[in-house]
Amino acid sequence: MSGAFKLSSAQQAMLGGALITSNLDRHERDALLSCAVAVRYGPQDVLFREHEKAHYFYCVLSGYVRLYRGSEEREADVSICEPGDSFGECLVLAGDAYNYSAQAMEHVILARFNLAEVKALLAQHPRIGSAIARSLSRHLLSTMECLARDRMQTSQQRVAHYLLTHCTSEGARASLRLPFQKRLLARKLGLAPEALSRAFSALRTSGVRVSGRAIAIEDVNALRQV
Amino acid sequence: MSGAFKLSSAQQAMLGGALITSNLDRHERDALLSCAVAVRYGPQDVLFREHEKAHYFYCVLSGYVRLYRGSEEREADVSICEPGDSFGECLVLAGDAYNYSAQAMEHVILARFNLAEVKALLAQHPRIGSAIARSLSRHLLSTMECLARDRMQTSQQRVAHYLLTHCTSEGARASLRLPFQKRLLARKLGLAPEALSRAFSALRTSGVRVSGRAIAIEDVNALRQV
DNA sequence: CGCAGTATTGATCGAGATCAAGCGAGGTGG
DNA sequence: CCACCTCGCTTGATCTCGATCAATACTGCG
Image (cartoon, rainbow over all chains, first blue to last red; front, side, top):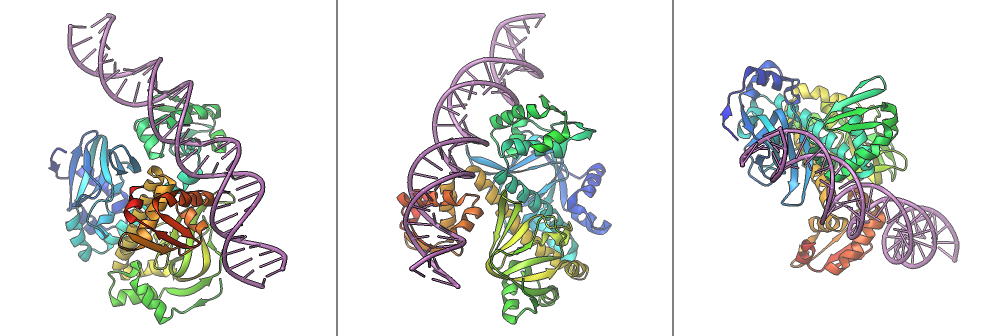
């Protein structure tokens, strides 16, 4: 980590669009943002570890952060946070230690919120509680979906679903560019990197062409069959 | 389902102890409870299905409810709700359709909250938003834990963990009685019933004796090694 | 008593993890 | 400029876990 800075106005604007501040009025939003500073982390930096006492929660401004549980040679990713996602908000309501570890992928800029300050704010601006609840709702739903998918779909199906939900389609064709390396996508989907690779080759018969981070889908409907 | 009734005072007391009403004062709690009625369901009854338009969320008063996704011959359980647990609260904040199906196991009594009324209440008693956020926090954490466990532990380890977190121990020995049938426990742990059975036999070498729903653990520490 | 749903046990199969080796692109230094 | 190294990705071989199918025992209930 390299220092804490005031949020730039561009960063404030970015946060204004994030889920965590949705449905808040100007005053409430300003109050919430007054608890935050901008911080940076480099690739592989660990923001915090499971069970550590928690002082902050975060919202991603740029880059990607992975949340994972377990230690040394037996870890499982629980979520990959993209710009606009927040994590650790649940600690505003309950608990005083992190329940997972967090690590920056590539170069990352985050808004860091002081937990104690936000907790204090809650009494004065109780609607902030609802804003946090909205963010938690979304997290809960996506985590449940992930769990259900893990339990009932094969690796190919999960990869196909990822492609279909992240591609920009032009007619029957579509394409996308992975925003991070394949290792990370593999972990997000609960796979070993080799398994992701194999899933991609298997999907070649369904019209998926992969070269580096660029992926082309020849027929969206064919892919949906999987 | 068989009719809707006013909450009895015993049921109100039960709800007062539930997470969803924690940290609320008397007025807020009464306001929230005024949106609720008691309903009953019999074994296997389906409360609602995925994608159905949502009008209510629920809190379990007695019995068990399973939440699951997917349809016909390919479904995965996402959560098993016990007395005191609520489900569907996330719809107060966002979305208008259920994201999973819900089915009663055995005989069940639920408090059924009217979503529209609770939403309206939110403006007047904004702290109810925080109460919901607290409940969502807990759900999110337990779902993440479940996901992480699915991804890094074997069936034996998950069963051992379940036993250890649900038994009442007396020294090195411990015991418990399953509150539901084994099929349900299997699904909760993301296993086929046969796999649960095999996990139990495998754990016999670690001092676990199973007879019907009664389970005895000869040495808690031995089990922790797994 | 007999039936239906539930639990166990055995045999087989397949998905994905793991281990190990080869490949290709980007970066560094001679 | 090219040899060399590193790191991420791919591919192949093998192994393990758990799903699935099928047959049998067990339990509770009308």
